[in-house]
Image 1 (cartoon, rainbow, N blue to C red):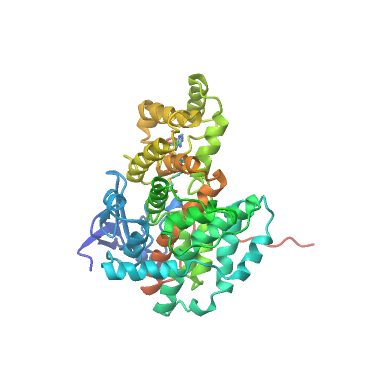
Image 2 (tube, rainbow, N blue to C red):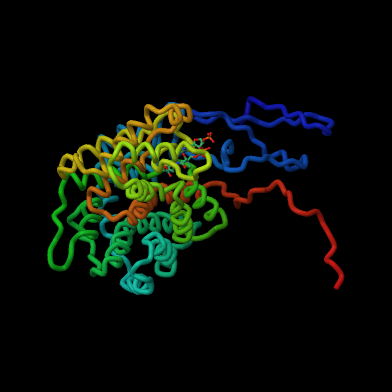
Length: 428
Ligand code: CMC
């Protein structure tokens, strides 16, 4: 399999160690270090900066060139010509659906959108002011207590049904988090609406009146779902894989992914962008410059939220598409002159021309614009990460399926131990 080898010389070892090198379709080669354990060595890579933890055929990112491919298709083309459910099919199955396959898939998802009525009781156990991510984490984990009939991870049909259930029910469960927090009744899904329209309907309709989905806003919602659908081995996806590697059921794995996504360095950033804009407050040049200086000050923990990315060092291709959608939504809603949005645009301008950000290759990322769009649509800030989780569920479940269907080994990292050596318990 490997026709190239790396040679490692280790002080104290008599012979060099030969490590096979593998090439993927595109992207950096990987050095197979598995043989090191037998030589009494581990590799050391905190933060997994240089570690390929698995083989995958789902998504490819070239951070230097700003490329994002799903099953080979560039995100810009998918965003322009496809829609979220088609992308879900592609991520799960590897190929675009035929028209018949697409109709069948969409029909299946549409007919799995209701949740077990008993699940409503779970929501009622939470405080009304609970963070919706806390609720989502809990209810998604609880799904495994309701859908026993699709929990055999070794059965391909069970894996498929769990994937359908998760993709179909996430918008329902996400909207229920919101309805619960504002004290309104839960709204059931409607089968004549598409995925994005249905989500907006469940968020904003009440028993007194149906929300009429605005096509520009529904399209924007669908784009947000698409642009967050998958991002290869990020922290939450790696969490889902690690959890799944133990044989845990898919609902438990996705709940683990939701927990990992919640952090402000990951999915929580879209919420943090709006919190930052609130903190900046007044739309004045002096004020904005003050926060830019704080972001550059090494002694201040403040960071410009929505800027920078571990992998993208040129630009985030999702942010480019999101910016277009952002402009469309603001125009449709007549919000071009909103003071908070003006602050956001000014921050972007300054950051793109300031040496500090240029040198460190810090560009606006997807969450910078998605937060602005979601706010304009009327979605409360604390729901932003929930929407990220809803969108990413297909990515998580596709990676889980890929891993469980293949040659799966339990994930078990090693460590560089720096604690005490063995010592005796003191005599008493
Ligand atoms: N504002 C100010 N300085 C920053 C920022 C920022 N947003 N991001 C990075 N830096 C600086 C950082 O201080 C460091 O400077 P120096 O080299 O002088 O010490 C340098 O840039 C490199 O930063 P890093 O922390 O080593 O980079 P990383 O790859 O570990 O972190 C990141 C990536 C996304 C966590 C970070 O850029 C960040 O905290 N950004 C803000 C949060 C955010 O928007 N996250 C969403 C990411 S996109 C959604 C997703 O995929 O989850």
